[in-house]
Amino acid sequence: MPFVLIKIAGPTLAAEQVRRLQEATTDLMAGVLGKKPELTAVLVEQVAIAGWSVGRAPACAAAHLDAKVTAGTNSAEEKARFIAQANALLRGVLGADLPVASYVVVDELPADAWGYDGLTQDHRRQAASRAAA
Image (cartoon, rainbow, N blue to C red):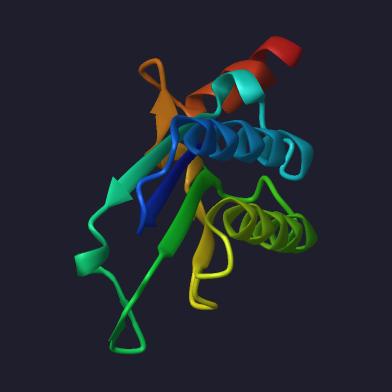
């Protein structure tokens, strides 16, 4: 049940670009990190470029992608692949103006600290373990 927040600054994205970011990010979450696409939420948020700088200089374009997942559910290799492929996606959509300092973060949260539909991930894991026993 990952949640992905993509913040974009610079020229306003076309609806097709937003859709591409949402669909490709969902595909990466499923294909690289093994997350269920039907439970993956992606929010693309456009922010004012005036609020973004890199190395003390104003940016022409900028991006930050933060993917929240349950701690311990992915290997270091999977996270590294996701970061590389998500960076390539951002560059493919935003182009050459995207600064090198465009971060992709895999934020691992404890299973008891988040969930969906009113239940924590830890509760779901425990219920599945009881059902399997």
